[in-house]
Image 1 (cartoon, one colour):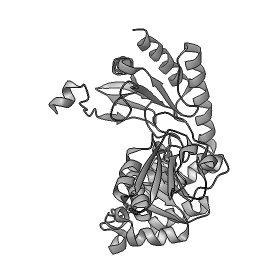
Image 2 (cartoon, one colour):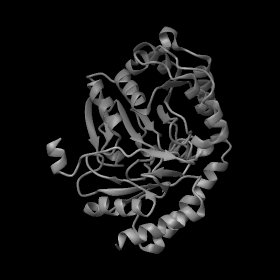
Image 3 (cartoon, one colour):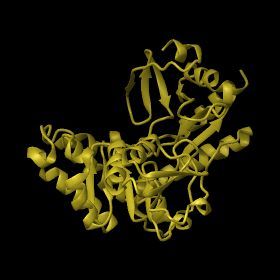
Image 4 (cartoon, one colour):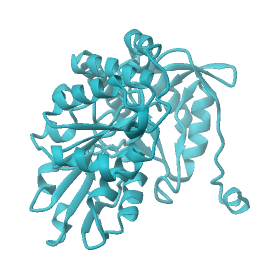
Amino acid sequence: MARLKSAGLERTLRPLTMTGPTTGQLDGRPVDVFCSNDYLGLAHHPDVRAAWSHGAGAGSARLICGDRPAHHALEDALGDLYGRPATLLSSGYHANLALLSTLLQSRDVVASDALNHASIIDGVRLSRAQKVILPHNQPDAIPQDTTMAIIEGLYSMDGDRPDVRAFQGEHWLAVDEAHAFGAIGPQGKGVAADQGAEPDFLLGTLGKSIGAYGAFIIGPPALRALLLCQGRTFIFTTGLPEPVAAAALAGLKQMRNGEARGQLQENTRRLRRGLDDLGVDAMGKDHIVPIVLGERTMDVADQLRKSGMVVPGIRPPTVAPGTERLRISVSAAHTPDQIDRMLDALHGALHA
C-alpha cells in the first residue's frame, strides 16, 4: 500500500446515492452521472424495478437445488434472441473464466487482443493454453495454429469496434459483447450482429444495458452441456437470485423494442458534436467516449466533480501509463440539458 500511495495509485470508495438513471447525490450534493454502464437507463425503468420483488435468493448452486424457473425463462428469452442456447453466469468475469477454462487446454493456442478485459486475460491464464497477444485490432497477426481468437465487440476503455468478420477463420472465434449488448445492432444483439457476423461463442452481460445483473454465454447446444459439466464458475457458484433473473428478463423485454437504443444514439451524437465544437479529441464513435489527458486526468476529473459531474479518471493498471483518461458514458436517459451542462463543465475543467 505504501508503494501504491507513493505512485498515486491508491483507490478509495465514494458512496453514490442514485436519485434517477443519470442523477445522484455525492458528498451531500446533487450530481449528474456520466460514467455508468446503464446505457439504456433501464436500471430505473418501472418494470425492471418492480421485478426485483419477485422471488428470493437461490440458496445453492443450480446443480444442487438452486435452479429456478426464472433462470430458464431468462435463458429461453436470450436463446430466442440469438437462435442458439444461452447459459447464465453470475457475472461477466465468471462467464469469461467459464468459457475459456472449459474449452481450452494446455495444448491449444489462444489469440487474445492486447486490449481485452482482465476477465479474458485471467480466463486464458486459467485455461493454461498457449497465449498469443494480438496487437490491438490486427487480425492478420493471428497464428495459423490458433485454436481460438477472442476479442471484444466494443472495447470498454478505447470505445472502438473490431472488424469481427476479419477475425473469423478456421479457428473458433469468441466475442465479448459486454458493452455492446443492448446498445448496438439489430435488437441490441451487439457489434457482431451489426456487422452480419456470427461468432462461434458470444458473451454478454445483464448489468449494463439491461439494468440488472449477471451474464450469459451463447454457443452451440454441446457448449451448454459442457458448461454444466465442467464450467467451474457455473458449477461452484450459487445461482442468481430469482429477483435478479426477473429484473434481467424485464430489462431484456424493454431493450428489444429499440426505443431507448435510438435515444442513446441521438444522445451520443449530441455529446460528440459538442466535443468536436470544443476541439476535444475523443476516441471511438459510440456511447463510450474516452478522452486521453495523461497526467492531467485526475485533476480534470476532480474539477468536473466540483461542477457536479461524476466522471472518475481512469488510470493504471486499467490503462497503460501515460494514457490516463476520462471515460464518459452516454445513457439514453441523459437529457439534452444534462449533456450541454457536461460539455460546459468539461470546457471549464480543461481550461481551469
